[in-house]
Image (cartoon, rainbow, N blue to C red; front, side, top):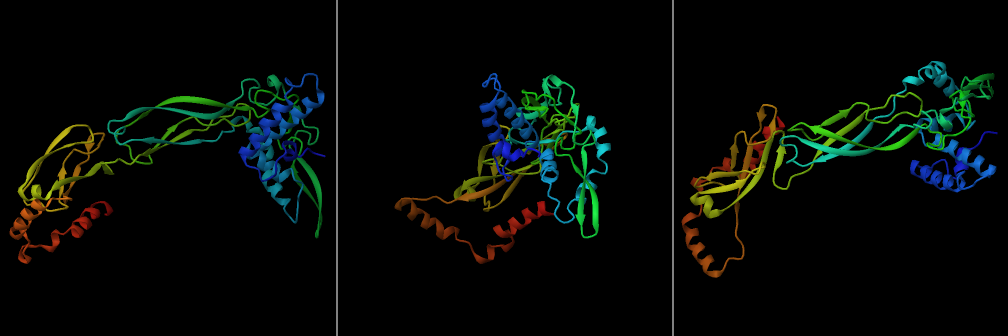
Length: 364
């Protein structure tokens, strides 16, 4: 009877990959040959633990095991195995070209970092081929032996009784799990998986003016598959732009609020602000400036190749608080002179209409 890998690791069939890894680490330490010298029973147990982990820690092998290893052919479920493995022998011949999985990583950038581009260091973990076994999972990379259960085909035939009579069905071999070969002696370095986790460090040269969600692909920077001579997948870096405290970005254009006193709005004034590049910019606030007015400064936005966006300054009139009584009395006198007259008000200059016009620039 085939070994139940879930029982070997002492976990349920609903166990997560973290649960599988945790169980493996605990048991492999307990039964490791170095900690149990001359203990054949512990050595045999250690081999079974590694074999179980090699299958259950690999999503593709685990799926095969859960489907083919359960021997549960309820109804006509067995026909799925025939469809899955009609091209099995062709797939085995292509093992040398199996491609590992891609890795996807999100990398955060500040708005300042993308102004002129940046070089960013990135550390990440990926699966690489085990050097000790050359990726085949056996000790010192020794040759594998032909599976005695399936004779190297990776499939076993089984006769199923159905309402229409006896049907012969092909299913994945429980002993080699479709590989056609088995390991003589397990590689202790990778636990027969053929791959090991490795910490990588690379530098990314990020171009200026990238947008949120920009994808940077590093070919062959992903995982190797758990098979000899596999081809690594790619590393996919998704750039995420952090929100800025002052500036809001729309493409290459930048927007920010400017606060002025109501007296400056009436009389007019010169103001100085610090732009995203760290430069001082002097702007002129004209007299009789209304709340919500937008000033456009051309080519003061973000650069991208030979283009530059614009900088939009949204003027907000600041209302002072906690004024003393004397100041309030002076303002009451001034108020009589500056109260708006109905004939002087243009409804189209209100804040709502201006907001709708601004939004329409980016929605069309």
